[in-house]
Image (cartoon, rainbow, N blue to C red; front, side):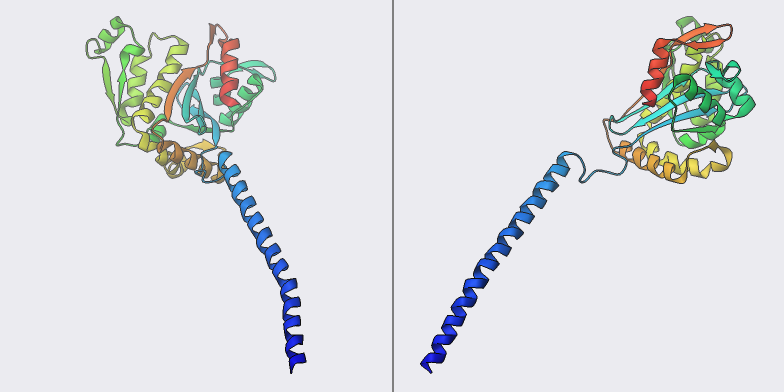
Length: 286
């Protein structure tokens, strides 16, 4: 009996001698793995890889074309990391390189459509937009939304004499709705330089989005609803990503909406971008 008890205790001792170090090793390496996972999680958070909102890292560059008797153009940059939306006016008379010399964006659009206009602009600048989007002024008004309104200071674009001619002398702030925007633009443009006339649309559109930030998250759905009235090479995946980016920006009070125009000179052949204008465009399309 004593021999059996001694054998039992010796066996138990040997078993514990093996199991205890093994258990300790397992616990040690499990702890190490957990700590490593925590460190990786913290590092990823520092790089912005954890908890990043959809669209927060996206940047989109789109050539917007307005289907008028004389087509108009804007470069749109939606920059989530910079929390900025920029409308950059590109005069329709802008000269672009063509296989047989040069032409203007407007002429290219009228003869070959928005895809070719985007292609020639990219060739001229040696960099191009991610996509193009073309629609009539009425369709763009639908995208902005019938319930949106904006105030626009005509003093920023017109001389006092011209404002008085148009009835904006003392009360120079215009109250706009999308439905009357096109008439407003066409009324203000006579007598303006090519550059200022192009800039006017960018200024008004930026005012709508700046003053109606909630519309940002609705623009893509509105574009889908108007798809039969638009020309674009944006894919369904593109629209989804743009929608995520705009929704992200709509929720940020620090989001800014701004406008500019490509600098250049008016010539008999058209609007010739200068070095500054080319650099502007490249920065927007970067």
